[in-house]
Image (cartoon, rainbow, N blue to C red; front, side, top):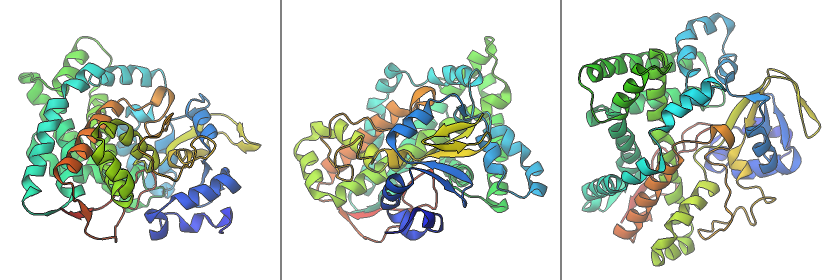
Amino acid sequence: MRGPSTFDPYILTPEFLADPYPFYHQLRSEAPVYWSERLQAWLLTRYADVVSALHDPRLNSGDRITAILSQLPETVRGEMQPLADHLTQWVAFTDPPDHTRLRTLAGKAFTPRTIEKLRPQVRVLVDELLDVVQGAGHMDVIQDFAFPLPATVISQMLGIPREDHGRFRQWSNDIASFISAGSINVQVARQAQQSVLELADYFQGIVAQRRRQPQDDLISALLVVEEQGDKLSEAELFSMFVQLFFAGHETTMGLIGNGLLALLRHPDQRHKLQDQPSLIASAVEEFLRYDTSIQRQARVASEDVEIDGHLIRKGQYILLFIAAANRDPAQFPEPDRLDITRQENRHLSFGYGIHFCIGGPLARLEGQIALGSLLRRMPNLQLASETLAWEPLLAIRKLKSLPVTF
């Protein structure tokens, strides 16, 4: 067994990316509150510690971008101000009272009633995507299905033309490389900033159109709210649009890809789900727990905090490993076993407390319809290759591709 002191060299190695869970298990059992020299952060891996930290008001979200930028040379940080200004206005990177105001506005688009009304639209889109590949006998699940499905749904909600999805994917990937990689360099930061500036230009054009000709979409709705007196600046507006697109497809893309891979590697669970399609809701919750696309959240200590005898100094960065907490045997019996009928499945994949993901119900809906339809329409689905590549990210776990035959 590797000791916890050797964890740092393995971060983001091919071995780690292929299966990070043995590393999480060892950290949780030997050093559940661990200082990483490489990440310059405290790592929490126990369920109880992660839950506690997620709703501890002394651990804030608002300083996370500053903490990431601190990895860059001081001579470069100044030029990254446009990037910092944009990301610090994301709902996920704010604290009350700003967080409360922004989340309330964004939440109006994700009410249970609104999400449920999307069900027929999602079903039609799923069938359209599968119709395209059905006759070929093979596809890349990520490129042909897992990305275009949630990207199209959130784009339709926002009012983004379908032909622009490719540009949005590249912009989104650049931002993900900055906020999700674990460690960054100047090139990554500059590319993320360039994409943020291009996104702002793009949305300026869309907003100008919607002001002239409002449509039945989220951008128009938020403009109306803004004009009725809510304190939503134009910069906050653009930041919200970008985050909604980013969060609206990244997590669901990972859920579909990781969930299908889990099923393909556990044929007993796959056959159980095919025999009992009514288990799809329970199955999706288990996919979210078993191999979540959101591997960790981050916080910054606003004052000195003690966790399990370790002193976390004011200003220090803390990484809350959701994925490790979801495999904690103190919370989940046989945590490494995929069980689509698991009861009391209180996973943390959508967060906890005031930062609980407002898009969770939409991700669940899309995941249930997507994976249920795949198994129904392609009952003999098989992996085309056991050699799989993962994106080199620490916060988001997603496949670069998932080739299958059927």
